[in-house]
Length: 68
Image (cartoon, rainbow, N blue to C red; front, side, top):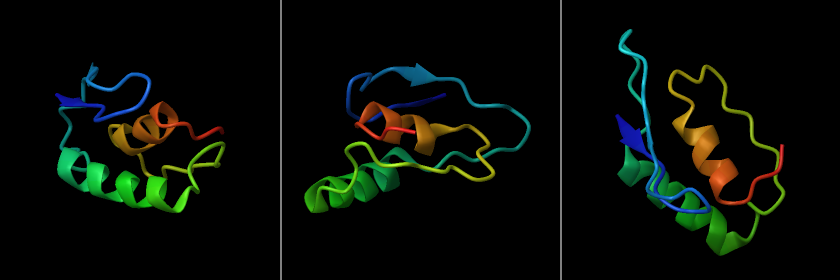
C-alpha cells in the first residue's frame, strides 16, 4: 500500500500490484511535486506516467491539479 501525499485526494491509500512493482516513494513524490508547485508548472499540465506499475506518480499529479 502507498498513499497520495497531497492534493484533492491527499491521504488516500492506493493498492499496488504484488507482482514486483516498486512505486515511487512518498518522500520522492513529495519532493518532486513541491518543486513543480514552486515553479507553477503543474496546474492543467499534461502528465505521462510511462511504465506505471502502481500509477502513484500519475495519480499524485492528478490530485495536485494536472489536467490530462
